[in-house]
Image (tube, rainbow, N blue to C red; front, side, top):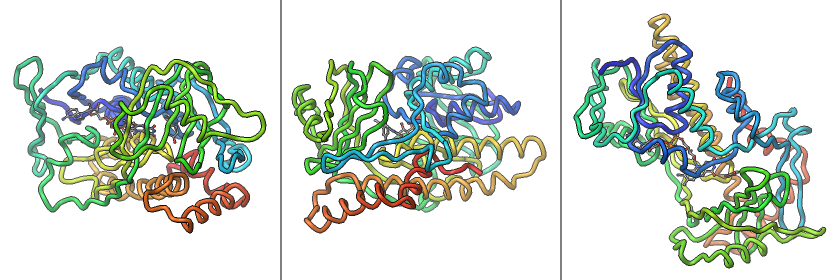
Length: 391
Ligand code: FAD
Ligand code: PHB
């Protein structure tokens, strides 16, 4: 087998890259260890930045998104029983954010690629990457028990945080930057209409809670829990009781409750590798960086990376120039570090830390008071939340 770009991983990074390359007339093959069903049902992110939505619509994969999504013009920060709205119309030049589940984006991208007769190889095993230090990169794997070799010009490592591309790079090439948080998020999906039209981020002495949604009938709710928490310790009753406490508010507030049909705990970390490229291997998305979900940046950063990568490959195949490819890592990292800063800041402001002392709690409350009363601070939150400009 031979192609121009060998893409490892059919998450948002790999599938958006394959789609953008196809629009530029560049061939690629996507290989994925999981089944189509698995990746189309995997519950993860749900909030798309303004620029991510624009890209999906402009490149022809936003039709269902436009019909089914929920558009939000602001978010609410809640603390001390008070609710404070950050208005994007006023503060972010009218830009919005969009609720549309990650697995729906995946379904749309898979459908578009398969309808165009282009390859995604699901259920592959024993993936390994070779030759990217020289001029003949290849990806080896087993498909239906048979050993295959995919020869390519470049390899795109889009295989997420636990993938094989990043760890395959020679020792000493990458520098890692990391912060692990002493808590995780317990997330549920429930058959309950959202209690508020917009997302509500709650700071509470019992810990952080977030009210978000998937549709007008389905709520997505998160609770801060200790990092080593056992999901079995959380019965449905305990989850609702804790959510009621952490989201309490004045003014006739009521939490809508319903049947919980999905539950999981995700750990939280901030992580970056530099550089995001070595020889003919280019890393994108979670393969190169992880953010805590508080700023909703993970999926959006993955899309931003591959947009830059696709432009660089397009320049190379049209002109033979490698200028943009050489600058790929540097260009991505400028945005990555700003998203890291924002996600870390939101996380630090809204969660209770093990080491919390009275000083830190007063400081967090002062920060929340400032960010909900100073126009300058609200503007900064709003412009980061809707997504910093791409160019
Ligand atoms: P991934 O989506 O991880 O895709 C990588 C793909 O590569 C996967 O399909 C994987 O199966 C495949 N793969 C792995 N190894 C191999 C291999 N050896 N060979 C071939 N294929 C391979 N972000 C938010 O903004 N908000 C959230 O609420 C949120 N919740 C999350 C919850 C969880 C449990 C996780 C794990 C992430 C969450 N994120 C969230 C982050 C967001 O989902 C990711 O940032 C986003 O999925 C990154 O896309 P990606 O394509 O880089 O990686
Ligand atoms: C989600 O809808 O899953 C979501 C939204 C905003 C966040 C994190 C997760 O900050």
